[in-house]
Length: 481
Image 1 (tube, rainbow, N blue to C red):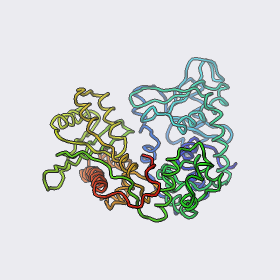
Image 2: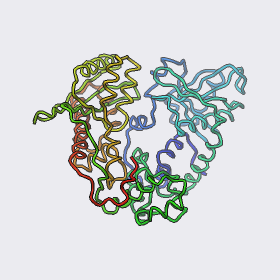
Image 3: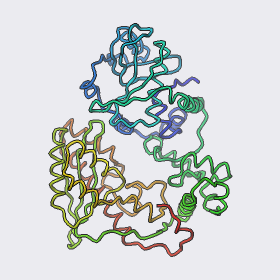
Image 4: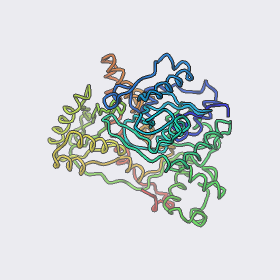
């Protein structure tokens, strides 16, 4: 293996194994540029050392040394010999290279002296997915080679200084299984076709779609996992056509441990991808109220701020255009004021329902309640009058789409965003640019993007309300919600 194994390979592998392969063997002209900040957002990282410095004392490697990783590694070793805490030190051993966010010296015994090192990653949240754990294990195993002792635990730290750890030993076996798969890719073994939501975060997404579509692989079916793909391959189902043509009862005898609803869903999704025509399984019920609120939140996880609460307010008794409203925080210090303004708005709502798409808005609401508080009557008022339209879509319609995100579904229904390639992460990049320069045109762009999101949410609700179930109801009554 000529290509060094790096910590970033574990993150890339869990998003899309092809990412690693394309980086080495793909046509560079097909690679889409992804701004570094956008990549950090996708990875759930903090931005900059200044936030971490609020909670830890550390030394930094001189920036000019990073022109040569060997020099940065030697500088890291010198600081480790002095027992210093180190921000973005470089760890190297044979063909392994890692750069943990923080190396912290703690009392103990190691090759360096009366201290031993543990590793931290600075994250926007304390969620530890496999890609987070495996990167930390990777650093810990390099540390073992350098200091003669494996750290017992590895750590994540969030912007508030909260820490979460896990026992390295508990995941070492899984780590090595993944490492072996990554090393095969580094050696030139191309992974089998598979399309997943993580592919969207890569600079090679268009190639992933093109190649998976080219062979009509079963992974094009929404919610079909890699484990599902392997099981289907084992029984000779490799393409979308295969599963569309299969008898669901026959599949059930071969996949006895799979819920029947799951097989029906895959079968229907495959048929829709081939016909390119949606199937409406049932008409969802929506409350008949005067005020419909379509709600969307923009957050910057790298700075730990929820900076925009936007909504479209539709008065169903009037024919006027639904009004866009928003509450905005220019900084972390303004976040409590924005929250109070939103709660005051909530107080005045009567005969209403709040629509949002997917779980994020509920999640942020709970986070802001914990952070700044809210009367229980308002908490209940919000939670008892919110409807997740993503769930309504999934339980009521089968669409000829690979993914059911807000952008995918609303674009299919005909909505056009002002910024065609924009997403929530891009909005964070614009927010960062606006903070740096105060350009009001960028602020307008942020607000327009948020307005597009809530108007797209409104369009989805109205589409669902206006369309009736498909008359051809083959095997649809068992559709999984």
